[in-house]
Length: 418
Image (cartoon, rainbow, N blue to C red; front, top):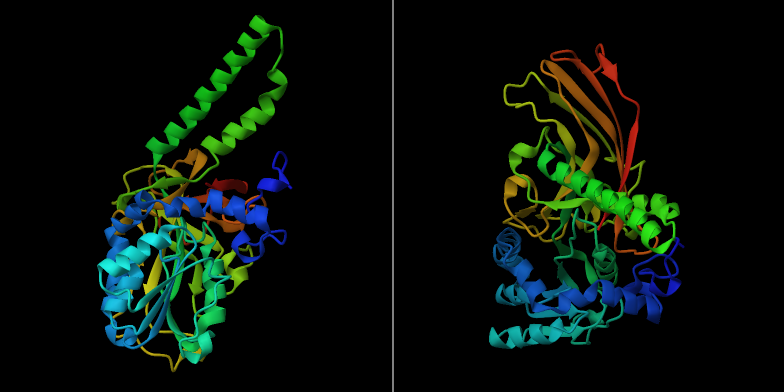
């Protein structure tokens, strides 16, 4: 158990899973307070509903493949306001089960009635891990679902760990040849320049440490108690908050210093709970290798400020061997949360370095390393990100494995994704 964290308020089950799966009453209450309750607020739902990149991708995927939805049984996991369920009904589904854990389910029922699809959409309040579908003759209620739709993705794709719930719903309710919307997700990373924001974080950290010094001096002079013994833990706490926490950003495309690289791929028809728990050091795409050329005419001399991560979600036909005979999508769709896609409420997660890396003219900077993503022990819905890397410099035009001018020691950063 992390120091200072009471077992009563750990947002994870005793086995480290999200509490909605096998958490006790206290863990579920903590999970609801920390995670679910915000989704019961209309302002939070509105924030997602005005994200037009998000909305257009899902609407295109559902309405553009109405032939796939016609007369099918659909499940919407985490329906929220119910808009995906309503679209599925309007696309021709014969029954839609809209699952919602919070009191937003009441608003979803109102939306279904107002849009005259309440005879098709059944809103079910509860965790998808707990609910049972009514027996309406659809293959007995178990594995009767033809399509699962869900907007489950969090920051940097995996934050919030809702993918666990989706996988359990898939394994319990989806037919062997059923479809997942979205069907595939990909995570990306790229080096970026973002000095203004990096400087701001550094300045805020410096200011809070200056305030601490004054606080210690004043407390000693005025009240006769020396608090300086707490400086080390205070500094660690502030460093984690200001410098070693990822930041939400809406980057411009020109902030990218190299082409992004894939660090994880998920096939939603086959991925496992273990896949959803993060990125392991021995995973296929966990390593990266970037070249930034100071001789590139498009490069303006900006230093490397850190890394940015984002994801894409595809709505396309199944690609796994067991799904070769599944229905094919005639109109694939894509949800992109990268800098080139414009605003989304997900944005990008930025991991600033403590000091920037200067790129010299007529030299190529190579950044080679790995990224790990793991859940925190105290909260199964939050993640830490470990980035390890080395840098090296070589003359522009020199082969990647050619003569090296300088190579750094390995650097390692561990960030919180708040």
